[in-house]
Length: 513
Image 1 (spheres, rainbow, N blue to C red):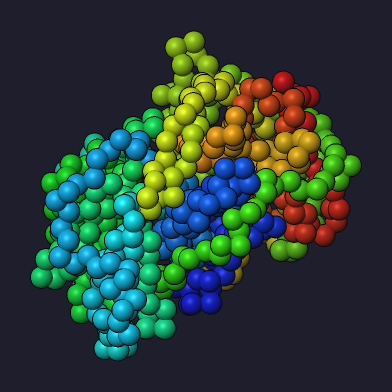
Image 2: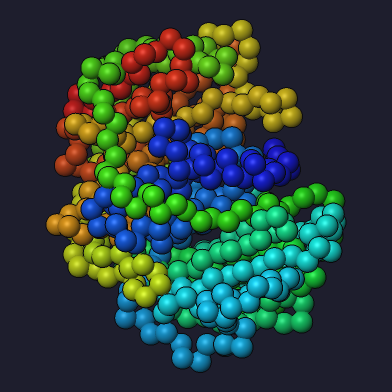
Protein backbone atom coordinates (compact mmCIF):
# COMPACT_ATOMS: atom_id res chain seq x y z
CA UNK A 1 0.00 0.00 0.00
CA UNK A 2 1.47 3.35 -1.03
CA UNK A 3 1.48 6.31 1.31
CA UNK A 4 0.93 9.45 -0.78
CA UNK A 5 1.46 11.94 2.00
CA UNK A 6 4.49 14.19 1.38
CA UNK A 7 6.57 15.40 4.35
CA UNK A 8 6.71 19.13 4.98
CA UNK A 9 9.95 21.11 5.45
CA UNK A 10 10.29 20.20 9.14
CA UNK A 11 9.72 16.53 8.43
CA UNK A 12 12.31 16.54 5.62
CA UNK A 13 14.79 18.15 7.99
CA UNK A 14 14.03 15.45 10.56
CA UNK A 15 14.77 12.75 7.95
CA UNK A 16 18.26 14.18 7.52
CA UNK A 17 18.78 14.78 11.24
CA UNK A 18 17.77 11.19 12.00
CA UNK A 19 20.06 9.94 9.26
CA UNK A 20 23.08 11.42 11.01
CA UNK A 21 22.08 10.60 14.57
CA UNK A 22 24.44 8.02 16.05
CA UNK A 23 21.89 6.77 18.58
CA UNK A 24 18.95 5.95 16.33
CA UNK A 25 18.19 3.20 13.85
CA UNK A 26 17.89 4.47 10.32
CA UNK A 27 15.12 4.36 7.76
CA UNK A 28 17.16 3.45 4.71
CA UNK A 29 19.97 1.05 4.14
CA UNK A 30 22.16 3.84 2.78
CA UNK A 31 22.40 5.04 6.38
CA UNK A 32 24.79 2.17 6.90
CA UNK A 33 27.17 4.00 4.58
CA UNK A 34 26.93 7.14 6.70
CA UNK A 35 27.93 5.26 9.84
CA UNK A 36 30.76 3.51 8.03
CA UNK A 37 32.01 6.85 6.74
CA UNK A 38 32.31 8.16 10.31
CA UNK A 39 34.89 5.44 10.97
CA UNK A 40 36.78 6.30 7.81
CA UNK A 41 36.99 9.96 8.68
CA UNK A 42 38.86 9.38 11.90
CA UNK A 43 41.96 8.13 10.08
CA UNK A 44 42.16 9.36 6.52
CA UNK A 45 39.33 11.79 5.90
CA UNK A 46 40.08 14.84 7.99
CA UNK A 47 39.95 17.15 4.98
CA UNK A 48 37.73 15.24 2.60
CA UNK A 49 34.84 13.96 4.69
CA UNK A 50 32.40 16.65 3.58
CA UNK A 51 32.56 15.38 0.01
CA UNK A 52 32.07 11.77 1.03
CA UNK A 53 29.26 12.63 3.41
CA UNK A 54 27.51 14.56 0.65
CA UNK A 55 27.69 11.42 -1.49
CA UNK A 56 25.61 9.54 1.01
CA UNK A 57 23.31 12.32 2.13
CA UNK A 58 22.40 12.50 -1.54
CA UNK A 59 21.42 8.85 -1.31
CA UNK A 60 19.32 9.62 1.76
CA UNK A 61 17.47 12.28 -0.16
CA UNK A 62 17.05 9.95 -3.10
CA UNK A 63 15.64 7.29 -0.84
CA UNK A 64 13.31 9.76 0.83
CA UNK A 65 12.17 11.14 -2.51
CA UNK A 66 11.45 7.70 -3.93
CA UNK A 67 9.93 6.10 -0.84
CA UNK A 68 7.74 8.65 0.90
CA UNK A 69 6.86 7.75 4.47
CA UNK A 70 8.81 4.48 4.54
CA UNK A 71 8.27 3.03 8.03
CA UNK A 72 10.96 0.38 8.15
CA UNK A 73 14.65 0.31 8.89
CA UNK A 74 16.15 -1.60 6.00
CA UNK A 75 15.24 -0.74 2.45
CA UNK A 76 16.85 -2.48 -0.48
CA UNK A 77 18.66 0.31 -2.25
CA UNK A 78 21.73 -1.66 -3.19
CA UNK A 79 20.84 -1.28 -6.87
CA UNK A 80 19.96 2.39 -6.68
CA UNK A 81 22.66 3.98 -4.61
CA UNK A 82 25.82 5.52 -5.97
CA UNK A 83 27.63 2.21 -6.16
CA UNK A 84 30.42 3.11 -8.49
CA UNK A 85 33.46 5.32 -8.83
CA UNK A 86 35.82 5.32 -11.84
CA UNK A 87 39.56 5.50 -11.46
CA UNK A 88 41.41 8.76 -11.68
CA UNK A 89 42.86 8.24 -15.14
CA UNK A 90 39.57 9.09 -16.84
CA UNK A 91 40.10 12.23 -18.90
CA UNK A 92 37.78 15.21 -18.68
CA UNK A 93 35.99 16.38 -21.80
CA UNK A 94 37.54 19.61 -23.08
CA UNK A 95 34.47 20.17 -25.24
CA UNK A 96 32.06 20.50 -22.31
CA UNK A 97 29.26 22.95 -23.08
CA UNK A 98 30.16 26.09 -21.16
CA UNK A 99 27.62 28.73 -22.10
CA UNK A 100 25.55 28.10 -18.98
CA UNK A 101 28.47 27.63 -16.60
CA UNK A 102 29.40 30.53 -14.31
CA UNK A 103 32.25 30.81 -11.86
CA UNK A 104 32.02 31.29 -8.08
CA UNK A 105 33.50 34.77 -8.47
CA UNK A 106 30.71 35.77 -10.83
CA UNK A 107 28.10 34.70 -8.30
CA UNK A 108 29.86 36.52 -5.48
CA UNK A 109 30.00 39.78 -7.47
CA UNK A 110 26.24 40.10 -7.90
CA UNK A 111 23.62 40.83 -5.28
CA UNK A 112 20.73 39.74 -7.47
CA UNK A 113 19.50 36.16 -7.63
CA UNK A 114 18.36 34.96 -11.03
CA UNK A 115 15.01 33.33 -10.40
CA UNK A 116 13.41 30.60 -12.46
CA UNK A 117 16.69 29.46 -14.05
CA UNK A 118 18.77 26.41 -13.12
CA UNK A 119 22.30 27.78 -12.86
CA UNK A 120 25.45 25.69 -13.16
CA UNK A 121 28.68 26.72 -11.47
CA UNK A 122 32.08 25.03 -11.95
CA UNK A 123 34.02 24.63 -8.70
CA UNK A 124 37.53 23.24 -9.09
CA UNK A 125 38.34 20.55 -11.60
CA UNK A 126 35.74 17.89 -10.73
CA UNK A 127 32.81 19.58 -8.95
CA UNK A 128 29.75 21.44 -10.17
CA UNK A 129 27.23 23.40 -8.10
CA UNK A 130 23.59 23.60 -9.17
CA UNK A 131 21.56 26.60 -7.95
CA UNK A 132 17.88 27.27 -8.44
CA UNK A 133 15.47 29.78 -6.91
CA UNK A 134 11.85 29.67 -8.15
CA UNK A 135 9.99 32.76 -9.22
CA UNK A 136 7.07 33.82 -7.05
CA UNK A 137 4.67 32.48 -9.67
CA UNK A 138 6.43 29.11 -9.76
CA UNK A 139 6.61 28.84 -5.97
CA UNK A 140 2.93 29.70 -5.53
CA UNK A 141 1.68 27.30 -8.19
CA UNK A 142 -0.44 24.72 -6.35
CA UNK A 143 -0.86 22.41 -9.33
CA UNK A 144 0.51 18.89 -8.72
CA UNK A 145 2.69 17.35 -11.44
CA UNK A 146 4.15 14.01 -12.38
CA UNK A 147 6.64 12.94 -15.04
CA UNK A 148 5.60 11.03 -18.14
CA UNK A 149 8.30 9.25 -20.15
CA UNK A 150 7.59 9.21 -23.88
CA UNK A 151 10.71 7.09 -24.43
CA UNK A 152 12.16 4.26 -22.36
CA UNK A 153 14.71 1.65 -23.48
CA UNK A 154 13.32 -1.55 -24.94
CA UNK A 155 11.95 -3.99 -22.37
CA UNK A 156 11.67 -1.42 -19.57
CA UNK A 157 9.18 -1.98 -16.75
CA UNK A 158 8.62 -0.28 -13.40
CA UNK A 159 9.07 -2.21 -10.13
CA UNK A 160 6.29 -1.71 -7.61
CA UNK A 161 8.32 -1.93 -4.40
CA UNK A 162 10.84 0.84 -5.14
CA UNK A 163 9.54 2.59 -8.30
CA UNK A 164 12.78 1.94 -10.16
CA UNK A 165 12.58 1.41 -13.93
CA UNK A 166 14.31 -1.85 -14.90
CA UNK A 167 15.59 -1.92 -18.47
CA UNK A 168 15.77 -4.91 -20.75
CA UNK A 169 19.53 -5.32 -20.33
CA UNK A 170 19.14 -5.73 -16.55
CA UNK A 171 20.11 -2.29 -15.23
CA UNK A 172 17.80 0.53 -14.46
CA UNK A 173 16.76 4.15 -14.08
CA UNK A 174 16.00 5.53 -10.63
CA UNK A 175 13.98 8.77 -10.54
CA UNK A 176 13.86 11.27 -7.66
CA UNK A 177 11.38 14.14 -7.84
CA UNK A 178 11.53 17.43 -5.95
CA UNK A 179 9.68 20.73 -5.67
CA UNK A 180 11.80 23.74 -4.74
CA UNK A 181 10.36 26.36 -2.39
CA UNK A 182 11.23 30.04 -2.40
CA UNK A 183 12.11 29.76 1.28
CA UNK A 184 14.69 27.02 0.63
CA UNK A 185 16.29 27.61 -2.79
CA UNK A 186 18.21 24.67 -4.21
CA UNK A 187 21.98 24.41 -3.82
CA UNK A 188 23.35 21.01 -4.85
CA UNK A 189 27.04 20.09 -5.06
CA UNK A 190 27.86 17.31 -7.52
CA UNK A 191 31.43 16.09 -7.02
CA UNK A 192 33.81 13.64 -8.67
CA UNK A 193 32.54 14.52 -12.15
CA UNK A 194 34.80 13.72 -15.10
CA UNK A 195 32.44 14.76 -17.90
CA UNK A 196 29.41 17.01 -18.34
CA UNK A 197 26.78 16.95 -21.09
CA UNK A 198 24.31 19.81 -21.56
CA UNK A 199 21.15 18.30 -23.07
CA UNK A 200 18.79 21.21 -22.49
CA UNK A 201 15.95 22.06 -24.87
CA UNK A 202 13.10 24.57 -25.08
CA UNK A 203 11.09 22.82 -22.34
CA UNK A 204 13.78 21.93 -19.83
CA UNK A 205 17.28 22.66 -18.59
CA UNK A 206 19.10 19.35 -18.29
CA UNK A 207 22.62 18.17 -17.50
CA UNK A 208 24.16 14.70 -17.49
CA UNK A 209 26.99 14.31 -14.98
CA UNK A 210 29.42 11.44 -15.56
CA UNK A 211 30.91 10.31 -12.25
CA UNK A 212 34.37 9.06 -11.41
CA UNK A 213 32.39 6.03 -10.43
CA UNK A 214 32.86 2.75 -12.20
CA UNK A 215 36.03 0.77 -12.59
CA UNK A 216 37.32 -0.10 -9.14
CA UNK A 217 34.02 -1.27 -7.70
CA UNK A 218 34.06 -4.36 -9.85
CA UNK A 219 30.32 -3.88 -10.19
CA UNK A 220 28.56 -5.04 -13.31
CA UNK A 221 27.26 -2.31 -15.59
CA UNK A 222 23.75 -3.22 -14.47
CA UNK A 223 24.60 -2.25 -10.86
CA UNK A 224 26.84 0.76 -11.49
CA UNK A 225 25.09 4.13 -11.60
CA UNK A 226 27.85 6.07 -13.34
CA UNK A 227 25.63 8.89 -14.61
CA UNK A 228 23.18 11.19 -12.92
CA UNK A 229 21.00 13.74 -14.68
CA UNK A 230 19.44 16.87 -13.20
CA UNK A 231 16.42 18.25 -15.07
CA UNK A 232 14.47 21.46 -14.43
CA UNK A 233 11.15 21.85 -16.21
CA UNK A 234 11.05 25.49 -17.22
CA UNK A 235 8.26 27.63 -15.81
CA UNK A 236 7.82 25.35 -12.76
CA UNK A 237 9.62 24.66 -9.50
CA UNK A 238 9.71 20.93 -10.35
CA UNK A 239 13.13 19.23 -10.43
CA UNK A 240 13.82 15.68 -11.62
CA UNK A 241 16.95 13.67 -10.80
CA UNK A 242 17.64 10.47 -12.76
CA UNK A 243 20.28 7.84 -12.00
CA UNK A 244 21.30 5.66 -14.98
CA UNK A 245 23.17 2.36 -14.84
CA UNK A 246 26.13 1.91 -17.16
CA UNK A 247 24.45 -0.69 -19.38
CA UNK A 248 22.13 1.99 -20.80
CA UNK A 249 23.52 3.53 -23.99
CA UNK A 250 24.32 7.23 -24.25
CA UNK A 251 21.70 7.62 -26.98
CA UNK A 252 19.03 6.04 -24.78
CA UNK A 253 19.98 8.23 -21.82
CA UNK A 254 19.58 11.34 -23.96
CA UNK A 255 16.30 10.05 -25.40
CA UNK A 256 14.86 9.38 -21.93
CA UNK A 257 15.70 12.91 -20.81
CA UNK A 258 14.49 14.51 -24.04
CA UNK A 259 11.22 12.59 -23.86
CA UNK A 260 10.48 13.31 -20.18
CA UNK A 261 7.33 15.44 -19.97
CA UNK A 262 5.74 17.18 -17.01
CA UNK A 263 2.02 16.41 -16.78
CA UNK A 264 -0.68 17.51 -14.29
CA UNK A 265 -1.41 15.06 -11.50
CA UNK A 266 -4.14 14.68 -8.91
CA UNK A 267 -1.59 13.59 -6.30
CA UNK A 268 1.64 15.08 -5.03
CA UNK A 269 4.48 13.02 -6.48
CA UNK A 270 7.50 15.09 -5.46
CA UNK A 271 9.28 15.57 -2.18
CA UNK A 272 9.99 19.04 -0.82
CA UNK A 273 13.61 19.94 -1.52
CA UNK A 274 16.08 20.40 1.32
CA UNK A 275 19.69 21.47 0.89
CA UNK A 276 22.05 18.66 1.76
CA UNK A 277 24.81 20.73 3.24
CA UNK A 278 26.68 19.25 6.19
CA UNK A 279 28.51 20.76 9.12
CA UNK A 280 32.30 20.98 9.01
CA UNK A 281 32.25 20.16 12.71
CA UNK A 282 32.06 16.46 11.79
CA UNK A 283 35.48 16.40 10.16
CA UNK A 284 37.26 15.28 13.30
CA UNK A 285 34.94 12.38 14.11
CA UNK A 286 36.83 9.39 15.50
CA UNK A 287 36.10 5.69 14.92
CA UNK A 288 32.83 4.78 16.59
CA UNK A 289 32.68 2.57 19.68
CA UNK A 290 29.66 2.14 21.92
CA UNK A 291 31.47 2.22 25.27
CA UNK A 292 29.76 -1.05 26.21
CA UNK A 293 31.08 -4.42 27.38
CA UNK A 294 29.78 -7.98 27.38
CA UNK A 295 28.14 -7.25 30.74
CA UNK A 296 25.74 -4.82 29.05
CA UNK A 297 24.04 -7.61 27.08
CA UNK A 298 22.21 -10.86 27.75
CA UNK A 299 24.04 -13.71 26.02
CA UNK A 300 21.59 -16.31 24.74
CA UNK A 301 21.86 -19.75 23.12
CA UNK A 302 19.89 -21.80 20.60
CA UNK A 303 16.62 -22.86 22.25
CA UNK A 304 16.29 -19.74 24.44
CA UNK A 305 13.21 -17.49 24.41
CA UNK A 306 13.32 -13.77 25.16
CA UNK A 307 10.39 -11.48 25.93
CA UNK A 308 9.89 -7.94 24.71
CA UNK A 309 7.32 -5.48 26.01
CA UNK A 310 7.86 -2.86 23.36
CA UNK A 311 7.34 0.88 23.52
CA UNK A 312 5.07 0.65 20.48
CA UNK A 313 2.62 -1.43 22.54
CA UNK A 314 3.46 -4.80 20.94
CA UNK A 315 4.34 -7.63 23.33
CA UNK A 316 6.23 -10.51 21.77
CA UNK A 317 8.33 -13.54 22.56
CA UNK A 318 11.24 -14.51 20.31
CA UNK A 319 12.58 -18.08 20.33
CA UNK A 320 15.91 -18.97 18.73
CA UNK A 321 15.00 -22.32 17.18
CA UNK A 322 18.24 -23.00 15.33
CA UNK A 323 21.40 -21.27 14.11
CA UNK A 324 24.37 -22.22 11.96
CA UNK A 325 27.18 -20.89 9.77
CA UNK A 326 27.64 -21.91 6.12
CA UNK A 327 30.21 -21.31 3.36
CA UNK A 328 27.72 -20.63 0.57
CA UNK A 329 24.21 -19.38 -0.23
CA UNK A 330 22.44 -22.74 -0.11
CA UNK A 331 18.79 -22.25 0.84
CA UNK A 332 19.00 -18.44 0.64
CA UNK A 333 16.77 -17.02 -2.07
CA UNK A 334 15.73 -13.56 -0.84
CA UNK A 335 17.27 -10.22 0.09
CA UNK A 336 16.94 -8.34 3.38
CA UNK A 337 13.47 -7.12 2.45
CA UNK A 338 12.26 -10.59 1.51
CA UNK A 339 12.28 -9.94 -2.22
CA UNK A 340 13.57 -12.76 -4.48
CA UNK A 341 17.35 -12.72 -4.95
CA UNK A 342 19.96 -14.94 -6.62
CA UNK A 343 23.43 -14.85 -5.05
CA UNK A 344 25.01 -17.58 -7.16
CA UNK A 345 27.12 -15.08 -9.13
CA UNK A 346 29.09 -14.31 -5.97
CA UNK A 347 30.36 -17.88 -5.51
CA UNK A 348 33.98 -18.63 -6.41
CA UNK A 349 35.04 -21.68 -8.39
CA UNK A 350 35.62 -23.56 -5.13
CA UNK A 351 31.98 -22.96 -4.15
CA UNK A 352 32.89 -20.48 -1.40
CA UNK A 353 32.21 -16.78 -1.07
CA UNK A 354 35.13 -14.46 -1.74
CA UNK A 355 35.04 -10.73 -2.33
CA UNK A 356 37.68 -8.24 -3.42
CA UNK A 357 38.04 -4.86 -1.73
CA UNK A 358 40.10 -1.89 -2.82
CA UNK A 359 41.83 0.50 -0.45
CA UNK A 360 43.37 3.84 -1.18
CA UNK A 361 42.98 7.58 -0.80
CA UNK A 362 39.72 9.45 -1.18
CA UNK A 363 39.73 12.56 -3.31
CA UNK A 364 37.83 15.67 -2.31
CA UNK A 365 35.69 15.51 -5.46
CA UNK A 366 36.71 19.07 -6.30
CA UNK A 367 40.36 18.96 -7.40
CA UNK A 368 41.28 15.34 -6.63
CA UNK A 369 39.72 11.94 -7.36
CA UNK A 370 39.94 8.60 -5.54
CA UNK A 371 43.04 6.46 -6.06
CA UNK A 372 43.57 2.74 -5.34
CA UNK A 373 46.71 1.61 -3.53
CA UNK A 374 45.85 -1.95 -2.45
CA UNK A 375 43.44 -4.80 -3.26
CA UNK A 376 42.47 -7.40 -0.66
CA UNK A 377 40.40 -10.58 -1.11
CA UNK A 378 38.25 -11.65 1.84
CA UNK A 379 36.40 -14.92 2.41
CA UNK A 380 32.83 -14.49 3.62
CA UNK A 381 30.56 -16.71 5.69
CA UNK A 382 26.79 -16.69 6.03
CA UNK A 383 25.20 -16.76 9.49
CA UNK A 384 21.66 -18.17 9.53
CA UNK A 385 19.07 -18.04 12.34
CA UNK A 386 15.63 -19.61 12.48
CA UNK A 387 13.33 -17.73 14.85
CA UNK A 388 9.73 -17.87 16.04
CA UNK A 389 7.95 -14.61 16.90
CA UNK A 390 4.92 -15.04 19.15
CA UNK A 391 2.43 -12.24 19.74
CA UNK A 392 1.49 -12.42 23.43
CA UNK A 393 -0.44 -9.13 23.28
CA UNK A 394 -4.14 -8.55 22.77
CA UNK A 395 -3.98 -6.96 19.32
CA UNK A 396 -2.89 -8.20 15.91
CA UNK A 397 0.43 -6.88 14.68
CA UNK A 398 0.06 -5.87 11.04
CA UNK A 399 0.62 -2.96 8.70
CA UNK A 400 -2.18 -0.49 8.04
CA UNK A 401 -0.95 2.98 7.11
CA UNK A 402 -4.41 4.53 7.13
CA UNK A 403 -4.94 3.51 10.76
CA UNK A 404 -1.36 4.23 11.81
CA UNK A 405 -0.47 0.60 12.45
CA UNK A 406 2.83 -1.01 11.54
CA UNK A 407 4.06 -4.55 11.25
CA UNK A 408 6.97 -5.83 13.32
CA UNK A 409 10.26 -4.69 11.85
CA UNK A 410 12.94 -7.38 11.34
CA UNK A 411 16.33 -5.66 11.44
CA UNK A 412 19.14 -7.90 12.74
CA UNK A 413 22.71 -6.64 13.04
CA UNK A 414 26.14 -7.99 13.86
CA UNK A 415 28.03 -6.65 16.85
CA UNK A 416 31.78 -6.98 16.99
CA UNK A 417 33.77 -7.27 20.22
CA UNK A 418 35.63 -5.62 21.84
CA UNK A 419 34.38 -2.39 20.21
CA UNK A 420 30.75 -3.54 20.65
CA UNK A 421 29.70 -1.65 17.60
CA UNK A 422 27.94 -2.86 14.49
CA UNK A 423 30.44 -4.60 12.23
CA UNK A 424 31.15 -3.78 8.59
CA UNK A 425 32.37 -6.79 6.67
CA UNK A 426 35.86 -5.52 6.02
CA UNK A 427 38.08 -3.21 7.98
CA UNK A 428 37.37 0.34 6.90
CA UNK A 429 41.05 1.20 7.08
CA UNK A 430 44.18 -0.83 6.48
CA UNK A 431 47.77 0.38 6.47
CA UNK A 432 46.48 3.93 6.73
CA UNK A 433 44.31 3.66 3.61
CA UNK A 434 40.52 3.85 3.37
CA UNK A 435 38.12 1.25 1.98
CA UNK A 436 36.91 2.58 -1.36
CA UNK A 437 34.36 0.09 -2.66
CA UNK A 438 31.22 -1.46 -1.25
CA UNK A 439 30.21 -5.06 -1.01
CA UNK A 440 28.40 -6.22 -4.11
CA UNK A 441 26.57 -8.89 -2.14
CA UNK A 442 24.57 -6.86 0.36
CA UNK A 443 24.29 -3.24 1.45
CA UNK A 444 24.63 -4.26 5.10
CA UNK A 445 25.50 -7.29 7.22
CA UNK A 446 21.81 -8.18 6.87
CA UNK A 447 21.58 -10.47 3.83
CA UNK A 448 18.22 -12.21 3.69
CA UNK A 449 14.73 -12.45 5.22
CA UNK A 450 12.29 -15.33 4.76
CA UNK A 451 8.99 -15.61 6.62
CA UNK A 452 5.58 -17.24 6.39
CA UNK A 453 3.73 -13.97 7.16
CA UNK A 454 5.47 -11.04 5.48
CA UNK A 455 3.86 -7.71 4.79
CA UNK A 456 5.85 -4.75 3.45
CA UNK A 457 9.63 -4.71 2.98
CA UNK A 458 11.35 -6.23 6.04
CA UNK A 459 8.40 -6.38 8.43
CA UNK A 460 6.05 -9.19 9.43
CA UNK A 461 2.50 -9.70 10.65
CA UNK A 462 1.72 -11.65 13.83
CA UNK A 463 -1.91 -12.31 14.83
CA UNK A 464 -2.82 -11.92 18.51
CA UNK A 465 -1.90 -15.17 20.24
CA UNK A 466 -0.32 -16.47 17.04
CA UNK A 467 3.18 -17.12 15.75
CA UNK A 468 5.23 -16.13 12.70
CA UNK A 469 8.32 -18.04 11.64
CA UNK A 470 11.34 -16.13 10.40
CA UNK A 471 14.65 -17.12 8.86
CA UNK A 472 17.32 -14.42 8.76
CA UNK A 473 20.77 -14.55 7.17
CA UNK A 474 23.73 -12.24 7.72
CA UNK A 475 27.11 -12.12 6.01
CA UNK A 476 30.50 -11.45 7.59
CA UNK A 477 34.23 -11.96 7.18
CA UNK A 478 35.27 -15.52 7.98
CA UNK A 479 38.14 -14.21 10.12
CA UNK A 480 35.78 -12.16 12.29
CA UNK A 481 33.36 -14.92 13.36
CA UNK A 482 34.85 -15.53 16.81
CA UNK A 483 34.33 -11.87 17.70
CA UNK A 484 30.80 -11.49 16.32
CA UNK A 485 27.42 -11.55 18.06
CA UNK A 486 24.04 -11.58 16.37
CA UNK A 487 21.76 -8.80 17.58
CA UNK A 488 18.56 -10.41 16.29
CA UNK A 489 16.22 -7.83 17.86
CA UNK A 490 18.06 -5.03 16.07
CA UNK A 491 18.35 -2.71 19.04
CA UNK A 492 21.06 -4.15 21.30
CA UNK A 493 22.89 -0.83 21.33
CA UNK A 494 19.68 1.16 21.66
CA UNK A 495 17.41 -0.83 24.02
CA UNK A 496 14.96 2.02 24.61
CA UNK A 497 12.38 0.42 22.32
CA UNK A 498 11.82 -2.33 24.90
CA UNK A 499 10.32 -1.53 28.31
CA UNK A 500 11.45 -4.68 30.09
CA UNK A 501 14.97 -5.14 28.71
CA UNK A 502 17.92 -3.32 30.21
CA UNK A 503 20.21 -5.84 28.54
CA UNK A 504 19.33 -6.78 24.99
CA UNK A 505 19.85 -10.41 23.88
CA UNK A 506 22.79 -11.32 21.63
CA UNK A 507 23.86 -14.71 20.24
CA UNK A 508 27.62 -15.53 20.03
CA UNK A 509 28.54 -16.70 16.53
CA UNK A 510 31.44 -18.76 17.90
CA UNK A 511 28.88 -21.00 19.66
CA UNK A 512 27.15 -21.96 16.41
CA UNK A 513 30.12 -22.32 14.01
